[in-house]
Length: 178
Image 1 (cartoon, rainbow, N blue to C red):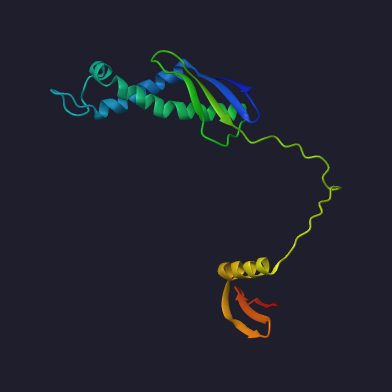
Image 2: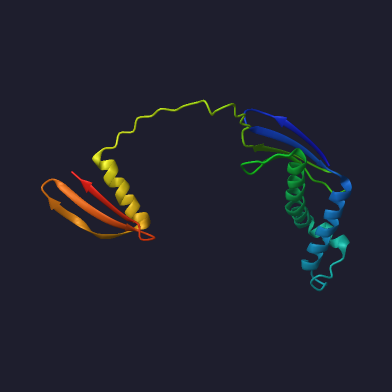
């Protein structure tokens, strides 16, 4: 199998793929067999239509069978040969699929970007996080919804409000909000 990879832009790659004629011909034979087993024509029992009539009356079905089975297999082989790991489905272009000829197509895919990590251990990041009353209350409510069971709380003494949550595993959490 011939596979040529071309970098288009950024993370896009164009794979030009050509499968050998013997692989394509084997798939055509298998497809004729599958379609012939299901073929119905007047004067013949189901599955007993001669191949010459299958070629005439069911050529579109046979071609569809070949495309559905052969193109994904050849595409997967091409990806493994090119050592590519796409992140999306391929955009197939210029598909040439004829009986007695090699299969060829162009697949355009996006791949994961190559990241070259330099020495990051000496890098520091400084951030300032402002915890307001709303963000703390929201965090506790999210924790409660995700992990906890509300035990008691909501008792107001002046401007201070107490809450107590019990987390999974018996871990308790108490909070006081002014």
